[in-house]
Amino acid sequence: MKIPRIISILLVLLLALPSLVGCAGDSAEVIKIGVIASLTGEVAVYGNAVAEAVKLYVEQFNEAGGIGGKKIKIIEYDDKGNATEAVNAYNRLVSSDNVVAIIGPVISTPTLSVAELSAADNVPMITGTATHPDVTKYGKNYFRACFEDPFQGGAITRFAADYLKAKSGAIIYNTSDAYSTGLKDSITATANEIGFTITATEGYAKGDVDFKAQLTNIIQTNPDVIFIPEYYQSAYLICKQARELGFTGTFLGVDGTDGILEMEGVDPSIVEGMYFANHFAADSTDPDVVKFVEDYNKKYGKNPNALAALGYDAAMILINAIKTVIENGGEGFALTNSAEHRQLIIDALRATELDCVTGNIKFDENNNPIKECVIIQIRDGANHFVANY
Image (tube, rainbow, N blue to C red; front, side, top):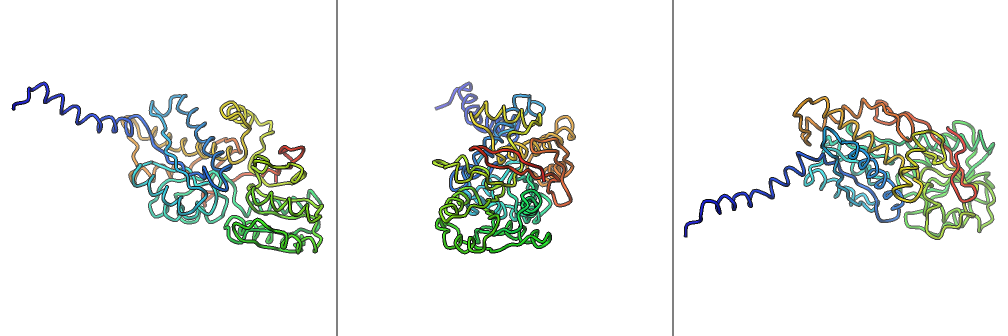
């Protein structure tokens, strides 16, 4: 049976429509960037804070007109704080989703696994929050918005000696975690450098919840302070058990401490008086910080933590670099995930100099930001700015 000409034309158009829509949606109208974050699992407080802040910045950027009318589209995957999940997410973003660049992961161990892969592919990447020094050492494609672990480990140790006038301290750390072990090393190195006495160093394994044996050994050495280079969940348990064993000195944490007050069922009195190194103070009077806190609170009904501030900055830095590439490309330029365009984004990232929420950011020769560390104290159930270090 012969099909009428008009019906033939309609069939051709219908068959072509899905590919035409996909092309317009993914190429002509949007610029795709990937986000890898720990949305579930042990450090979900961090991952969700980063993801929320990235979405906030992208929403604000798109509402302001995007880049020449093109909008940023986020493709997000949950790595559950796990290196294997992070690698799987990275492979999907690069091979299937064809993103032009990626934000994340959030914590150091999964970030290190992705960093090595991304260097081989030369994919433009920025982590807002992974502080391990090796993150940016695999290739020139990887950037970060946060300071490195040796910097914050040194800062909190000098703070103990200079500001608190402490003479000695002990360290309890996670031997299974790159973040925790790296910080332990930097605290120890700085202590040796400035003549600060480390009375004991005790380790535990990933998943441990009973730290009383290690803490008993520590308390017997009578330290003025205990350094806890660990994420908030284990840090809280360590503080609780140390108090139960009779320790009355001061706890000192790192940026992983941020989020401890947001834990379900937390007793703020356990960590009252604790100090920790951080990237950002929500009670700062800096106009950029004030606006970010207001915007985040308006959207999510809560104050942002430092991980959110760094996620916001990472999005700002990456999208500013993408915008630079497109604008320099001239009329008709279409950004792709080709090797040539990846390198253009990397070059634009390297030339960054921006006033961000966590300070003015430009990168050193290793793609690490040059910035200060903030010291926070937990007081009356809230985080309070103490000093810059």
